[in-house]
Amino acid sequence: MRASQGNDGEALSEDDGFDQPDLANYGLQRRDSVAMARWHGVLAFGREHVVVVVVALAVGLVFAVMTFLHSRPDVVPLSGAGGASPSVGGQVSATATPSAQPSPDPVVKVHVLGAVVRPGVVTLPRGARVQDAIEAAGGLAADADPAQLNLAAVLDDGSQIVIGTTAQPDGRVNGGTGGTGGATDAKVNLNTASQAELETLPGIGPVTAQKIMTWRDQHGRFSDISELQEIDGIGPKTMAQLEPYVCV
Image: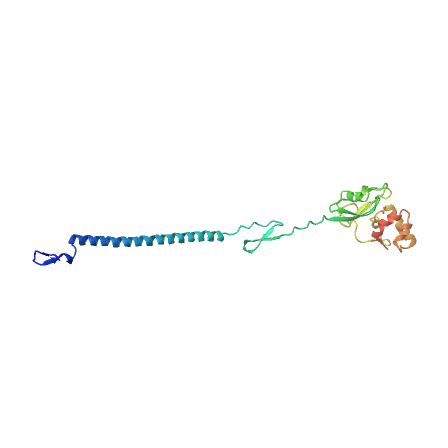
């Protein structure tokens, strides 16, 4: 081993250490290596966390969008007539409301008698008039005289129309809304009625009413309404008109 003499006379060996410049360089290099290793570790740690953060943000964004879409209220159309009705939870019921059945048109039944072609009960739409009822009964007979009737009178259900003749022009509407001579539900008693009361009967004029009173005076009283046919001028047709309105 080679030794050297120092200034102080101490012997220094070349193996005791590095030269001062080499030692300084070695320290710097070592610090740089440690620092670089730390930065590499930091950079590697940072990249891994950045990936994790990005994935977490993406997952959070997807979750937020789906939550927003599911939280929006369902739009349910209002149900109209015969349409589907909304149920609880925004769902639309598939059961359709049954449509209302149209109601039949209202009608009235009217009894037409007297000088018409086909006397009897006719069915007319509500709001029909006397003229409509006469046409429904076949029209006027040859000897008819409807001059005393209000042909434009509106008929009620259950009305009775009596068509007068040229011999006895005493037409009337009984139980309706118009016509000459309004009728009452009370029957006329043949044994107690005055001439004025008798003249309110269908087909009975002043002359026939006087004949009824004369027959009553001669026979004392009527025992049956059919005895009216014994009076001149009251035949089967007139009798059919009188039956609903007279009593004894």
